[in-house]
View 1 (cartoon, rainbow, N blue to C red):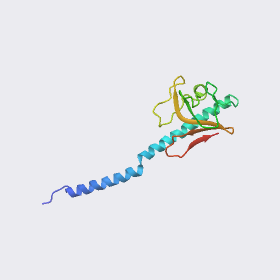
View 2 (cartoon, rainbow, N blue to C red):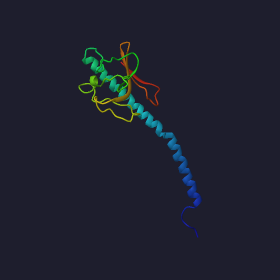
View 3 (cartoon, one colour):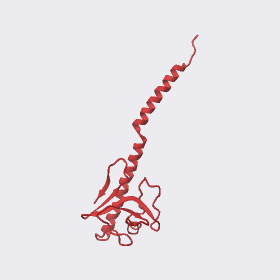
Length: 152
């Protein structure tokens, strides 16, 4: 008399094969690499957004570059776009936010806080410099890319 169904050995072999195939699939997809690539894509978009806002400001103001409230100028070395107690960054908030340039500063995906408004301290995670008549915006926290920098 034959019984219908699977033996324990057949079930164990099937489960083992499924486990091996799913392990290979997870390694091939590599979720951490996909997240890093998505974050770098956002960084590239953010860098372009900031550079576009600076370009629009420069055009509207007949070649003048945006400055901070204390007339902080863009320098030939990278400075973070930020406002905090250290004063090492450059606060471009009042020059670029609102109006025709940009609604909010984008922030690097690795940072836990979002930009709120110009009245509060903020840190975008992006850097900017002006050298040889060119403005460059840089994303120093890039994960997959060695360097995300856009210049005009």
